[in-house]
Length: 391
Image (cartoon, rainbow, N blue to C red; front, side, top):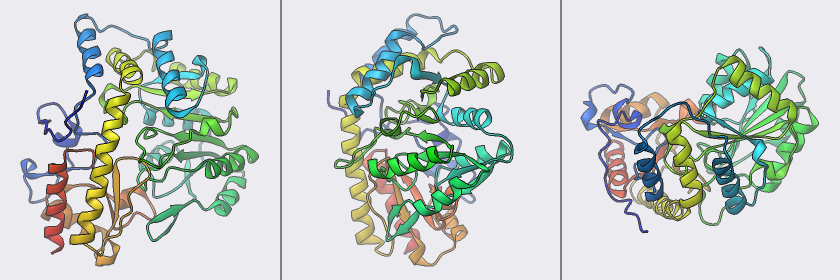
């Protein structure tokens, strides 16, 4: 089946965070705002997912449900084996209501107040507030940026992991927002450093299926099966299912499994699964590959379009097509505006709602993150509005 991702599907009236719960913008009515910020797609879901959901709705009852069944677990296992050549056992899969709450649970169960948790800024901003709001400290192993290319600072990582107060690292692969898909060599260095220093390594791999042609995602679980490594996955970004609140956390160590069960069930009371999330994820992982391939192709073209537009219309902006995710990460520093000025220009003057780079931590100031998982006409409108305020 061929999908039309140019179709504009109205999202007002659907309780959409992206379209209906936009942060306030001065001088602009909400009906005039163009949102390309939060990480969900403006594309229709794959037909097999919609069919599975319709069948489940027709059963008429939505009582307590549990995803830990062979059909669901084998769908998750089979997807990662076929798509990414990564094998794990069914008993390694723990179903959770999302990656972010899972990260919070892991922080609380594996570290203690005052511990340092390593992140690589600029990075997905909930990492920082989960750490700080749970009484831990952010330890920044900042990424190194040279002419738009990002790399890890391994010497700095070794130094910070060796500190006895550093007990956990949260890795982002593919990296949000800079778009790096870390190589096997890079991941092996990270894993070796963490293991050598007895640092838990938690890998957020929620964007793992959204990778550009020519790039290759490697699960951290393929690099090492050490019991201190946890992989956080979900079909939510890949198949536009974020609202169904279903994630799959891959845990191999017996000690971590016991701690996870104690925290999630014993302290948080988060048992059971979303019944619609169960059937949607199973359908995605067993019948959604063609849809995903088409989405990646369309996103590739949108990211190329952004690059062409910038080179012709805003040539001082720096931008490289990312290896993964559906985000364009654009450097506007050469225009000389402060982060606050840039935010005001784009939001209030252009009426475009993006994720400002400063929220991603050090190194994000005067960058903007654009979610390009939308019809081309919406993306074009976004770029034209941005060009208008710069001119």
